[in-house]
Length: 247
Ligand SMILES: Nc1ncnc2c1ncn2[C@@H]1O[C@H](COP(=O)(O)OP(=O)(O)OP(=O)(O)O)[C@@H](O)[C@H]1O
Ligand SMILES: [Mg+2]
Image 1: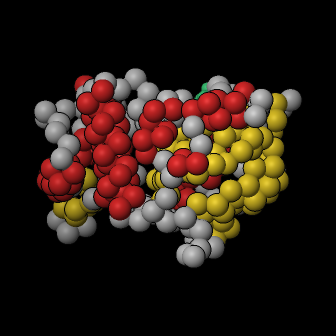
Image 2: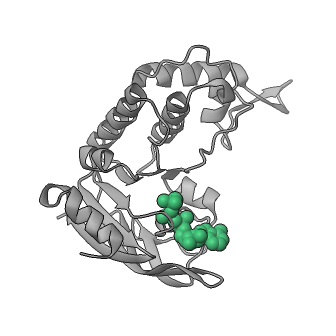
Image 3: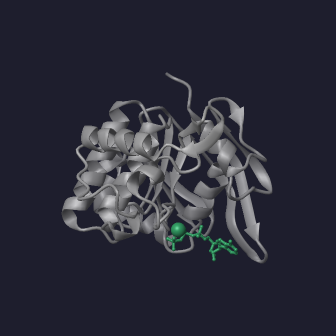
């Protein structure tokens, strides 16, 4: 068996009086899609933020590719190959598609051989190529992404992860508020990423989505791991019971 790409052991995180995560452990393997399920406030977003470097757990450890992530800030985690798409989409609304794909890693050219300026043309050409490659249609890639639909925005966030060769992609509610064709586009992208051996953590409230894309389902209930099942060995009823703490 291959080694896990990500391992969490005994992760606990508290916010004041709220125990957001309590002793959570799990493994994730390359090319595997793990769904995180749980009621509102169960700790799903906190768990992925503990991986992506936004939150720092008081207890436990998280390792990625054998490397301890503790203390790393989000930029450093991203540089290791973990790309996160947050519930509140981390795109800059006022920038165009190309600039969003290169956000934080802009291509720079040098005027007169030394004055650094953004190479917008190169970023636009590169981003048009990758979107085309992924079958994502955007009416005008030079428009600010604030003008795009939810699905198009989601697709751009996913393409960013692909372009930068993420080895772990984390998605918090990627299909919430998407139309049906757009949900399908996101699902297709997930399946393609899995084929490329990218590991994926997928948070959703939608059990249809969860069963459509995931290999394994980890259920959180009030910060604790209520259970973990292979998607092929469980069903809606059991997952809902685990979510309710009544399994
Ligand atoms: N930054 C924060 N400060 C204080 N409390 C927080 C913070 N983030 C989360 N919490 C609390 O931690 C608990 C877990 O929250 P979290 O956002 O992880 O839940 P969730 O499972 O993602 O829920 P949802 O499905 O509604 O997105 C909740 O009780 C929440 O109020
Ligand atoms: Mg959340």
